[in-house]
Image 1 (cartoon, rainbow over the protein chains, first blue to last red):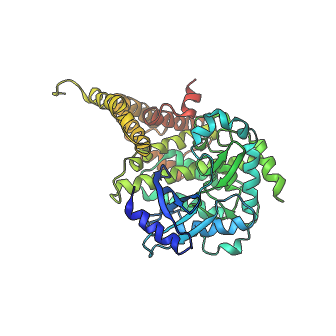
Image 2 (tube, rainbow over the protein chains, first blue to last red; image 1 turned 180 degrees about the horizontal axis):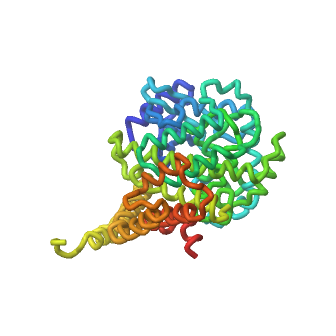
Image 3 (cartoon, each protein chain N blue to C red; image 1 turned 90 degrees about the vertical axis):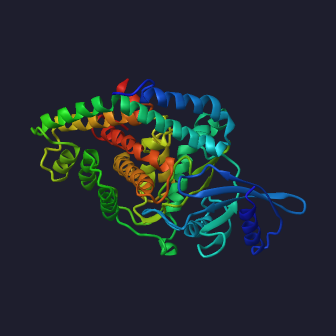
Length: 327
Length: 120
């Protein structure tokens, strides 16, 4: 066990009046950019499970501070959105660093397990509808509560992505074509809202009973919320189940039925396709950003190096969508 | 080449075999995930050594035919698209972008679902 981290957690939880021995502290396989630890606090007659999510203090160009993620979770939880309860938040200047502690939610996040294991089979039937509903609920949050988040129009986001791509000096004919195509699309005339920014398997907790929680708010921002619908339809997030358009488990119709059952704004499939291409381009640029952290010597990471060779996945997905009738 | 056997691809295969057979079951789960990435990386290098030049040349040949140049490369094509000096609806251009993408993914990840779907 990591004794030093255990001591830091113990002190932090003391300040929230949770006093007990930290046990079973273990790292979880998380995203490429954050540390995630699971642990238990031994209380008098029981033990409680928690998660520590910890940033490095250096955010990528699209990411927000870890402590800001906690603030979003607190706010949307009040509105009834499915997010884990935040127990304690630490700022970068505190010993624990830019991080937060939340209650552990039972369920699974690993996409391949959710898609493969028999115990989730029933949950998957209704998951696309549930995701649509949940996304729509997030989008109803009052954006006045999120003045600390970046706010971007679609046009600004597109040109940001394009400029980020050009920084890496690795010209891609497919990305150049995509950028011109995207500039001509209609992304839906809808009011700005809180955008999760990375809503997909891996960032949601699923149990046998269906969707339990929405986590990993690192890419949250304020803008055109329909981005969240296109993102989960990207082939990168179907984990090989390419014929199931929504996250590798569901149909677009079910996702939209779920969304439109909550939202005043009724979304159609064509708008989602524009966002799907946008999302695929965005994921490609994120791959470039991740790889550059390795390439420019910020950190030496085989994970980040490898992700540079995943840009080509987004290119083949885009040409499939634009030229070959892909969905 | 002046070097003895095993050649570079054969060396990489031996490392991959070692990782798969001897190391994989010995590492904790969070490192097993990284070990899979390491194996993927070695496979990319191996495929690039074996097929990279051929797959690259194929694309450059079509690219030079399309833009009628003996020296043009990927950067030139990207620039011509950016400046809209090519007809974006031209089928040969679309086919070239498809071929470029297919050939890249053949090296990077031939198990990728879209690639498998398009090849079948």
